[in-house]
Every structure is written in C-alpha cells, then in structure tokens.
Amino acid sequence: MQSLNAIARKLVTRGKGILAADESEGTIAKRFAVIGLPVTLETRRDYREMLFRSREAMDKYISGVILTEETLEQNARDGTPFRQLFADSGVIPGIKVDRGAFPMPGSADEKITEGLDGLRQRLKHYADLGAGFAKWRGVIAVTDHAPSRNGIRANAHVLARYATYCQEAGIVPVVEPEVLADGEPGDHSIARCEDITTETLETVFSELRLAGVDLSGMVLKPNMITPGLRSREQISVEDVAQRTVNVLRATVPAAVPGIAFLSGGQSDEEATAHLSAMNQVGPLPWVLTFSYGRALQSSALLTWNGDPANVAAAQAAFTHRARMNALASLGEWRPELDLAA
Ligand code: 13P
Image 1: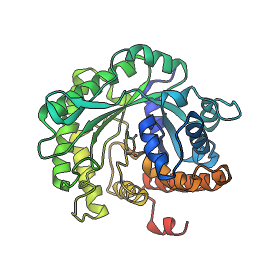
Image 2: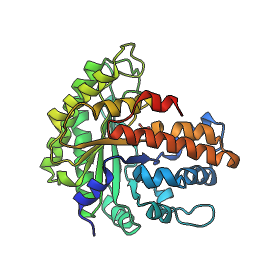
Image 3: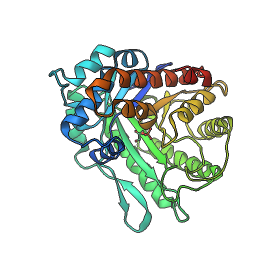
Image 4: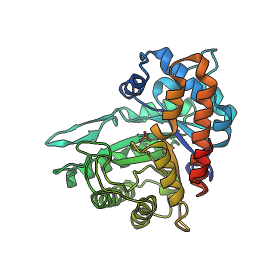
C-alpha cells in the first residue's frame, strides 16, 4: 500500500490538480437546471462520463477526482467501470464521505457537517474499491452573528475526527473548511474573510494536532481570501493572492504537502487568475493547486447541454479549463491564453 504521504504528494503533483465531481443529488440538480436537463441516474452518469473520458485532460492535468458513492461504484454506458478509466489515466479516485451540512443546534445561522457515524466501516469499503483519498466539507457561514467561536470549533473538531478515521483506513483526508463567499447575505468585506479564515485555519490545525493527524498525509482544501460574492469591494487579483498566501503562511504548517483550493462561486477565469498569481508570490512551503468543482466544469456543462452530439466540444471545453488551471498551478497562466481559446 502507498504511504499517506506518497498519495498526498501525488494529488498535488506540480502542474496537476483535483477535479471535484462529487455534487450531491441536490447540487447536481441545481447545475442541470441551468441547462434544463432532468436529473436521473443516466443523465448524471452521461455527464460525468463525458468528463472522465476527456483523455487529454485526465492524463495530463488531473491528479485525482472527488466522487460520490454512486459514481465510485458506477460503470460507463458501455459497462466499463469508471474506476478503470481513472486507472488508465493514472488518476486517483477520491470519495466525498460527509453527509452534508445541517443547521447547528442553538445557532440559527450556522451549520455542522454530519457523517461520522459508521464512517470507519464505510472507509474500509471505499478503500477496498480503490479510493485513495476522501473529502469532508465544513461550512463556515459569514453573517452579522456568525461564525461563532463554537461554530468554528465544532466544525474543526469533526474535520479532525474524520481525518483520523481516513488515515486509519490508509486514505488521505482532504480537509475542507470553507468560509463561504456565496452564502447569505454574502456582502462581507475581504478583511472579514481574512479574519475568519485565519481563526478557522488556526482552529483546524489545533484540532488536527490534538487528534494526532499526520500532517504529511493530508491535503488542505481552503477558500481563498476574497470579499463575499455580493460585496461591492473592488479587489485586485494580486491583492487576493497576497492576502491568501499571508493567511496560509501564518496558519498552515510546512509539513502539509499541498493546498488545493475550492472555487467557491468565482468565475472560471477569476479562479484561474487567483491561483496563478499565488504561485507567483514567491517560494512557498507547500504546493498550491486547484480542487475546483464549478470553475472546472461550468463551461463544459453549458457546452454539453445534455446532447450526445456535443460531447467532443464539451470535452474540449473541459480540457481547456483544466489546462489553464494546470498552468496556474505553475504560476504560468496569462489572460491571453484564455482569450486565444
Ligand atoms: P467549488 O469549486 O464549485 O466551490 O466546489 C469545490 C468543492 O468540492 C466544494 O466542496
């Protein structure tokens, strides 16, 4: 069996990143609503098969894919297990193991992620199916009253407990504390995001240490430091990059091999530009790459539009976005490369 550190380092191989394709049934329904497509087992499979059979993207730019339980065990239309496609491309399959974020008792604006019960047995099953890593998302809402100290601590604590179960099963935990940019009301300043993310990451690493998590065998999946999506603050790409790197330097131990960001509602190009700018800031102790859902998939989804005739064009759109982000993970993306597409 590969060591946790070897798997984690492979996930953050320079020039590659993670495709988050673990939308819950509710979330994929929202995505499909944009193209007016009904959500069935078959439409979910066909859509994801289009992504996973994008051979150039999967071979060259993608290190791992985060899946739902349904997809991890699913076959392509012709009966080929999706897991075979990943093996053919050298992509590590990963699994979302949380059961979603639910209202936190006693705190109207906050949520706590559930899914620890039975996790040990489920992880064993996923490891038997070949999953090399897992994901758990803790949601930190930003409102006038939130987050509370208790909300941050509770989410950090369950993230740490999840991480210990993963490592016990030989699975690399992707630890995702997301300070929401696209929540309600979503008009907070970049300074507030900076403060809350700093406190969140400090608390997460304190809980991870307390729980005895091997920091060299995990990947952090944080938000970038940005204003809320409905804030009117105008912030340059360089400012987002510098502030994000500053917060990470202050809170993330160098033992962590890599940091793979979520896109959190940023546009495709913003998410790429921010990642590239961060990789130009200077020498950093960890690899900085992407673990995007929307910012990798949205152009491919719109191009596909549920029509088999559009598969090749959708795959080209996905491959382009994956290549742009792969360049960004090396600090080599430039706006002209996107305009030329
Ligand atoms: P987005 O990049 O669309 O934010 O999704 C990433 C993810 O996996 C959220 O849990």
